Image 1 (cartoon, rainbow, N blue to C red):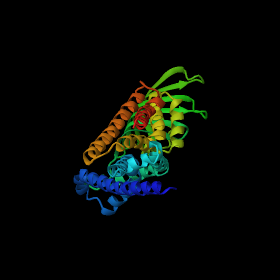
Image 2: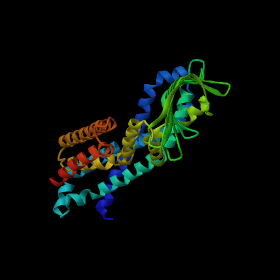
Image 3: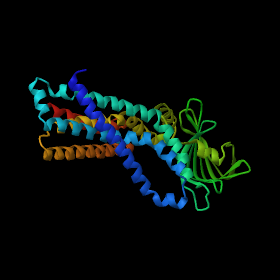
Image 4: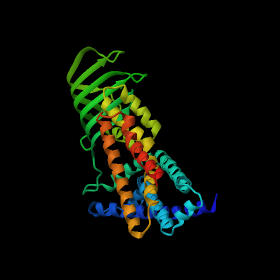
Amino acid sequence: MRILERYMIKSVISIFLACILFFIFLYIIVDIFNHLDEIIKEKTKLSTLIDYYLTYIPIIFVQITPLAYLVAVIFSLGNLNRHNEIIAMRSAGLSILQISRTLIFLSILLSLTVFLVNEKFVPSSTQILETLKTDIRKDTKGKELKEFINFCMYGSKNRLFFINKLSLRENTMQGITILQHDENQNIIKKIVAKKGVWEDGIWSFYGVFTYNFDEDGQIKGELNYNQEEIMDISESPQDFIRQRQNPQSMNIKQLQSYILKLSKSSVKAVARNLKVDLYNRYLSPFNTLVITILGISFALRIRSRLTALSSLGISLGMGFLYYVINAISLAMGKVGILTSWLSASLAHILFLSIGIYLLIHL
């Protein structure tokens, strides 16, 4: 490794680490103040808060790494440019690619690190956070909140449950849809009920519609309706909460399996949404690479303090625009306007192309 590369790496890494620590501290402080009234009201223990924010660190790291590295790159290259060191490098025969390749290589390493953290640590952190939130969010009598809205879970006997509202206080659930699959994940039965009541270890459903399906996925026989029906469901209300499916708490393999189950059911819109999330899970770690290339193209134009501030502002503005367009693209994919893959990759392709174009024309 050349002296120049070591010099640039040392400069960027030191600023990047300082930004990471500062942003994590700022993130936690802002979050605490946003929930300060709730924390005081519920008399949350200090140990619980410490556990909560320590568990939150991998999620914060994934979110702030692109911005932290962008700031590090802009300030490092800006400092070199203000002291005419970039001009000296160009005079020595170095191309823009040779000057910036070390920073791009570091951004790729960071992207892979973010992908690893997002895959290995964020799902487990999300699960732990759900448990800790239950400890933090107490009612005035110190009891845990007992109502849960709009969630799904995959239960025993290849059954996929969609529940609008579940109350652990009353042991009831409302707005119930159950999709039962065979061993090949083909849907064979659909149960829709208005309400379910858990009593003495038995589920009683009310306003129950039952549909049976053949091998081709077509409804067979007549629609069966019962005002009240005892259901052969072994899961208790507590089991539903423990087993509910949260895509953020799944790794890629689990999410792929979950999407496969949904794709063979009648909830294809949900499966489409999750496919967008899956492709975004693959591509979002490379936000660091995309906005780094954008940042380099602006940072290399810095000549003075005023230009440095304007370049920093433009780079941050482009980064913000990148996230806005990515959010719009993902939303368009979830409503079916764009394909799942295109919606997850559109912003990356667009802004990576812009960044490469600006670098070429420096």
